[in-house]
Length: 400
Image 1: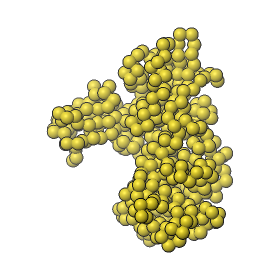
Image 2 (image 1 turned 60 degrees about the vertical axis):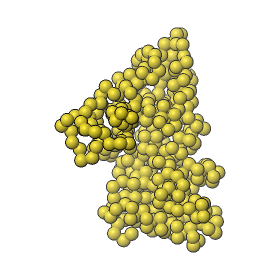
Image 3 (image 1 turned 45 degrees about the vertical axis):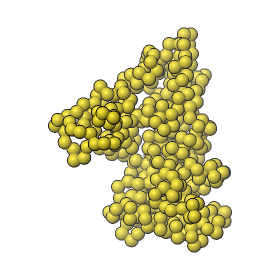
Image 4 (image 1 turned 180 degrees about the horizontal axis):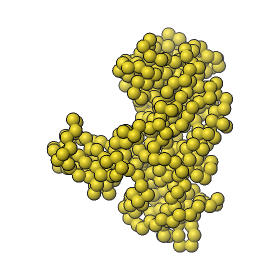
């Protein structure tokens, strides 16, 4: 830990006192530890279900607006309430766009990560994670889901990557892959280039019915259709560290609080009204932590963990939503359980040269602790830094 910048804070939840601090008042790039800020904001602003659509009926027409709901036809969450509502309607469907007032990427995101699964674009009405799932069928042919995108998928005799992969054009949905045998078991996820035209095409292809556009402001008396259970969405965001869900959830918060979809508005509101008692003013800019503009201190992370703990109240429920050492999520393979029992529940945060963990630990003596362990600016492999954090946290569990 001596060749890079390390911060650590360890707090006794029951004794309500800080046990140890190292650089706990210094700012670190948190990476996906940022999702804990998103999580707490959602706990304070959303109910037990995620709103899928806002809608209003006018005569023989049904007009609907997006809420940013990430669970809408999500590959894992499979939110279908909104879809079934639109399918079952006997009215003419009109989608009204324009209530999202942000960019497709968050501030400070890497443009050259556009082809990577973890950087899906942000939209008012996401469909199927905003990510194309590519795979080889039983006959070895390249396939894509949603099938609508198959028309944009082509083999290219001039494309020779070092390792077989599909690549999307930066500004369009043209996907190319090497004109060679597809490796057995090949699978890849690539964000598609979102557009209003593609959203409409996918909606109509999925619903098997006509959907028209109607630019109209959302009235105050709209009704709401709810989709997935909120806890299941939070679990999916935290355990595998799903960037797409984190970003979209802030839009959902904005939809509930302001009637528009604007991430900056929610973050500013949360900092001023929900997080104004943190030890250090957080520099918070996105929902997922993809941006290096985010800067938090270890003692801020601990204070946030305590606020989350107070909000959820049920340790078992809270632990079930976090990554679980030796059991589930991003720390499943990092920690071992203690005679089959997990003892650490923590959110990881990784970017190049940065690796952090913030969460909860229970010691063999039954002490309940909150901790933030942040490492920035190392050039060694992340695994070495992670393993040392695991060794130290396991030692704390065993000895205290």
